Structure formats: C-alpha cells, structure tokens
View 1: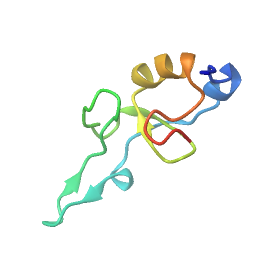
View 2 (view 1 turned 180 degrees about the horizontal axis):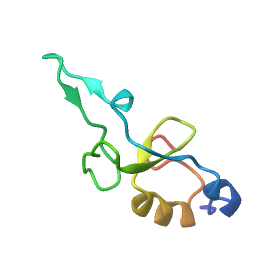
View 3 (view 1 turned 180 degrees about the vertical axis):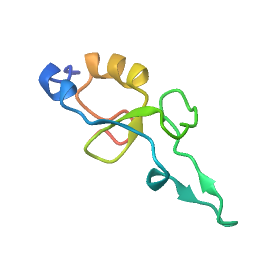
Length: 78
C-alpha cells in the first residue's frame, strides 16, 4: 500500500544548489555531473536540487509528484 510523504517532511528536505563537491570524477579526472534519476537529465552547477536523506538528489519538479504518492526515495526506496 502506497502512502504519501508527510507534507512537513517534504517541506523540510534540503534544497541547495549543485556544487562541484556533488560531482564525481571519471577515469580521466574530468568532473561528471550528477543526474536526476527521475528525468535522467544531468544537473548543471548552481541549479537547485532536493537532497533526500539517503543521499540521492533530484529536481524539485521531478521529486514532488513522486512524494505525493510515496514516502520513499524513487531510487532506493529508503
């Protein structure tokens, strides 16, 4: 049975700009931007993202519809 996320909990999720520290480096040492797992689009530096407690990040417009029906991360179900 699906349950929506608590609206207060959703409101309190950290929304912060994507920074270099959120990127990984590939084998060539180049920065790899994180990707929103819902829309599969790479983030750009400075774009605001929602960080969920498990560590995954999403665009606000991608995560909010999911949280209206689920109280878990769309990737790992935490």
